[in-house]
Image (cartoon, rainbow, N blue to C red; front, side, top):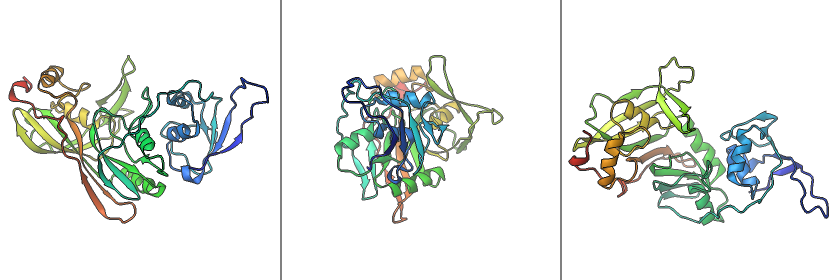
Amino acid sequence: MPAATIIEAQPARPGDAAAKPQVLHLTVDAESAGQRLDNYLIRQLKGVPKTHVYRIIRSGEVRVNKGRAGADTRVQAGDAVRVPPVRQAERAEKPVPAREFAVLFEDDHLLAIDKPAGVAVHGGSGLAFGVIEQLRRARPDARLLELVHRLDRETSGVLLIAKKRSALKHLQEQFRDRSTGKTYLALVAGDWPERLKVIDMPLHKYLQGDGERRVRVVDAAHPDAMRAVTLVKVRERRDGCSLLEVTIKTGRTHQIRVHLAAQGHPIAGDDKYGDFDWNRRLQKQGLKRMFLHAWRLQFEHPASGERLELHSPLPPDLPWPSQASTPA
């Protein structure tokens, strides 16, 4: 990737071994257009810990076109990015291990992998690396590898990665326009009512006293309410549980988990919104994580326009619990 143009950065004077870091003024090039601000800075500020990059963004010290910007701001070609003084390579970060993942589809434009549970899609928030950093290390000759969308760390299944900037833009537009089809498999407690096929309940994201992020259902009149729509189809009922095909029409944080729990049918193994007594019994049956899997993804190929449908089979670490471990 072409390096960003540094407009203003004072070099160290000869003999000044401990030169102070200077303010950087970066201009976003065409190849970097469309990237999230956090990803753009991580690539430009080699040697600066990711945790520090996120810290200076949150504090408002990073400016884009003289205004504050969030980590998820998309930078555009020609944007002026001001970065406060940062000292690079103050301490060595843990090296990112190269890792390939099971491939569901790949061509010159995109890569679809079967993400395992327990792996974040990217580093940050205390994590040194995730799927995308490991893939970049495993494929050093790849010109571009960028996440198209996200999955929670605890969720397994289909994950899309763009290999060209044009593909990234086209695919992300489909996600924003909700023209993709994202369907998950979720095992929930109880007998899900056949008539309940659409959940249209606004959500609100908040922080608990300990700083932990949570989401709850709120009234539509709530000032921070975000509309969230989830479609549910029963795939199988057995042993006091229901296996659901859940399609999200909006992509809110923890949407599936909160919507299903709000109906009195929490997801098996959910340590935030679930039935904790049931979860303990499930662990003894071999379920070590939340039973939520990104099973199917439908989208339009960014180059050919062909409608693709990718599937990830249920992994072996998601066993169906026995009757003895179902909720009381």
